[in-house]
Length: 230
Image (cartoon, helix red, strand yellow):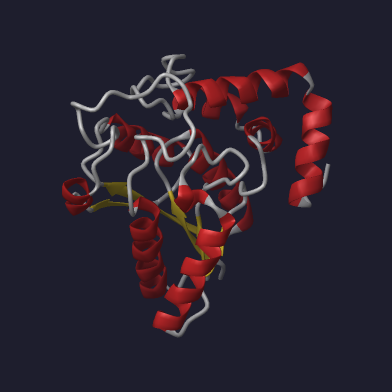
């Protein structure tokens, strides 16, 4: 029986990945990480979404040690969240977050016999985060599998999609409205369309506008990249 572990934050990307996984696997486990993030509302959103989507195995894991080590505007109230994208690594980057998340998810996958881990990282719109790059994911996958002597796939279904195509993928699975109104992507913890001011909201809104303006073309592009059938 096919089993996967979805790293699930309750945001646009991981929710889209979860919706897809539920159509492709017999058993889907979600893992959400509590790392002492500035806006803990995302944990509540993840719980509610997992329940709504019918996930029966959802684990919230305490990794608050990361908060002590990783200084970021997403872990500290006294560091302002930027309103514009900047060159280089932004202050919303949490050092080591995806290294830790993928490694812990792999340990969990090993224990339950899952053949894959799914994460919503994306290089096309990676926003300056070095741990969202394909090169990083492949390198960590190689190291983890050497260390465990087991081939647990690291699947990244959004890696080469831009935000408009990610919206198209959610719509493909009939989840556009759920992803739009019930996820939490905003750095200022405003659910749905967000605050409209932070870089995450700008990226998300531009993608949605682009998709809604030309659904057919964006959907064709998404289908070509993913290999899904029309």
